[in-house]
Image (cartoon, rainbow, N blue to C red; front, side, top):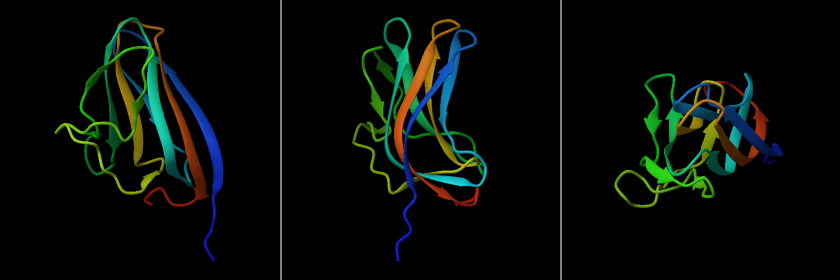
Amino acid sequence: MISRGKVRALLIQETSGAAGSTGVHLRPGSGVVYRVLYAIASHADVGARSCAWYLTDPEGAGIALTASISLDPAAVLPITAIAAAGSPLALGELKATSARYYSFVFDASAGAKVGTIRAIVEEYPGSNEA
């Protein structure tokens, strides 16, 4: 029998503290695993800002999943966007734990600028090492 998790719609927002790199994290709590079904990210800053998706892995530094692009405030960046080589990013199943998770990072122009992730995930109980 296939175990089904609980499907959840998530709205995750982070406000910049100052100008510079600001991360919004698609990161479940301890003992929970997300299977990411859909995720897009955006920012509410002035004009186009440099943005990218990253994978944080406890065994290494943050890994850029997408090329850094200039994103307008009205646009969204899907987690399956264009890779650094210019071709569509092909990923297997996307799983996130509290130790290994995805982040949308944008270059805020000042403090009080908001980055947002809208995601649909399937939530399971599980290990942080899943």
